[in-house]
View 1 (cartoon, one colour):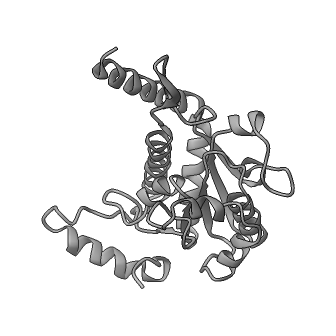
View 2 (cartoon, one colour):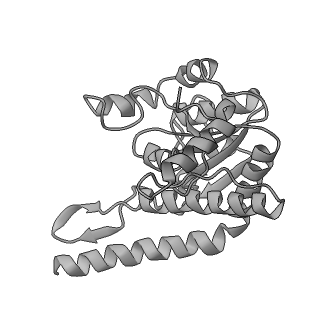
Amino acid sequence: MSDRTLAGQYLDAAIGLLQRVRDEEADAIMAAGTLLADTVAAGGRLFAFGAGHSSLAAQDVVYRAGGLALMNLLAVPGAVGVDVVPATLGSALERVDGLAGAVLDSSPLRSGDVLVVVSLSGRNALPVEMALGARARGVKVIGVTSVAYAAETTSRHASGTFLKDHCDLVLDSKIAVGDAELTLDTVPAPFAPASTVVTAALLQAVLATAAGALADRGIEPPLLRSGNVDGGHEWNARVFDRYADRIFYRH
């Protein structure tokens, strides 16, 4: 089997997952986008959290050309990605009880805000407690996860529950347990993960919905432009000034 055939198989698998998300999560995407628009219109702030590779999709919606300027990253030091050494420390931190509460206590999150929690498995203590703690503080939570994990694995949180059990809205990425789309008889492990591709697209679909919902209400969406396009920096500076009290990645 050629590498090119494998590449095609992977891309077909990713396309198939994206089509499933488009068709099966349409109502949830609309509801999530509407919630973001409601929050922006009401003066609330937007935050995104993810640990490990789930953080990639969260980072993709923060300070992003074409994205909402009000989306802020809620970061847990050591759990954001593979920049920590050893990388396995990040995985260990996801299982630490109480860490989410400490992060929330030191964060600017407050009642009326929205927190997007991205966790593929949704089974570890950190994302579960992040959702629990945020809701206890009056924050609306949108969970982005693979619901299949709740049916096929056990929770690592003391409650026995998953991220999906503690959200106001749940977006199902449809990713199979193990996050690997391809197998070969000559390769001992499954390979080619698609969770980042699908989850990032899912969140961008939500933000696009939010931008449209704001425009429908006569509210200009606080969008950023590319700094590599003439006038982009000037445009962004105006947005930063207007929404300085709701943007936390600049200070």
